[in-house]
Amino acid sequence: MIKKVTIIIFYLFFFTIANAENIFLSLKKNKVNVRYGPSFDSPIKFIYKKINLPIKQIDKKENWRRIIDSKNNSGWIHWSQLKKANSIIPLEDKILFKKPSNFSIPLAKVERGKILILKKNNGNWCKIKTEKFSGWVTSKNMWGLTY
Image (cartoon, rainbow, N blue to C red; front, side, top):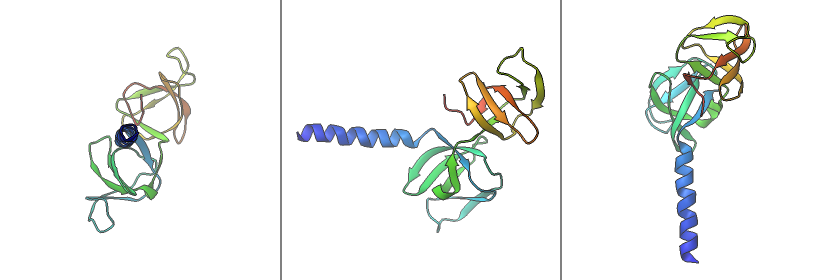
């Protein structure tokens, strides 16, 4: 019985640690402080000023998440400033199509580094929205997608 309980506790511990990494989130606000450590007493390292910016959670401690962004900046953010991932960033220039096909009507060029609101991901294609357009881009080379 003790051996079984130990295995279950080990599994839960390992599963929790594994889940702490490789989770994409988005910034909830237009101004988010990134700190050197997981505490409000820790000094501010830098400030994000982009709502919906996709970031990757690489660690967690209580109500704090250690994150890294697409440019390899890292630090700690309080969980209240984060939300479920709803955005992606292309790592290369993309073409926005009307439908999820290279043979569809091209609508616009999406430049590398632009924050795109993710509406749907079917594996090979992402339905996205920008300020002016809505359509489909290939999911290859996107920061913020979990494969």
